[in-house]
Image 1 (cartoon, rainbow, N blue to C red):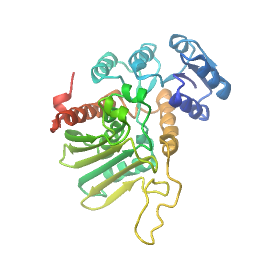
Image 2 (tube, one colour; image 1 turned 30 degrees about the vertical axis):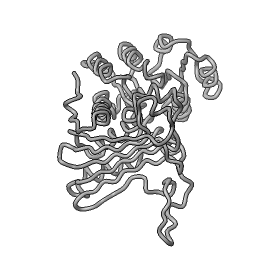
Image 3 (spheres, rainbow, N blue to C red; image 1 turned 45 degrees about the vertical axis):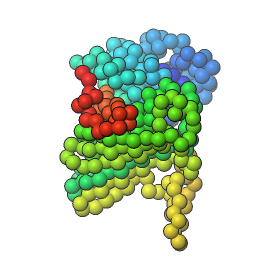
Image 4 (cartoon, one colour; image 1 turned 30 degrees about the horizontal axis):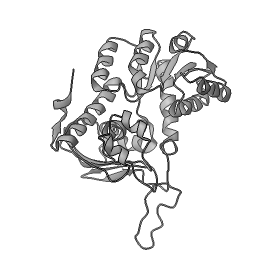
Length: 334
């Protein structure tokens, strides 16, 4: 099949590399406002370069991957759907939830599949955790803990446009909690602080946060995030039930060290970047998209799924700013 890629920044170039290695993909068509980025992709992967999204949609592609700036996501999703071409779009659907709702309303009734990029759904550990929950082997759940700790904060320009740590970083935890447990979040309480880069505080954001999520069956989920984790990129989840408890991310590249005597775990070199931690998951995610394009599976992460994680992020943002519990229904629109 022939896949188009719109946007060739860090994640777009990574997707181009991944797609070029998939057996299902015969050729790539790429476009980017920066000609050098498009030229580099053409040279590395033998991609065809076009000068605009319109040209790409007219180039006989079977599916498109949207990796452009967030502001461009709504228009590119709608353009793909209007052209009848299956769409993969990196999260978020749009810069604001109001815009995301507009996109959802615009595509309702269409049979063109749309997949939003939440790669943890394709990580083997999280897949196994979901299967354990679904099988009932853990018993009734009572506690979930989810962690995302970055080794260093992104630059000031990124922070200013990110929408805040809950919308940019924690949203991955929110999505995977919903997916693994199969439950919805009903209420949140969030806290945050700033002990690191001044520009994060100046942007009105926190660099370290904690959130308590109440799920619709009474399970308590605890989410911990930080822009400062010098030992590496740390993504983990614990799921505790009345019969058993399991963990995702307890492996030799875990960026944590034990101070217990005689303990040598973890023994490997810590993960230092999200692409390192989730290389296989990204490949599985884009493989799934080729199956969506081929019509052999439905979208594994819909716009509706992405918006649900977004409502949790909005509720946590409001809770942080107003120092109070916030229900999801309080922030939900549309």
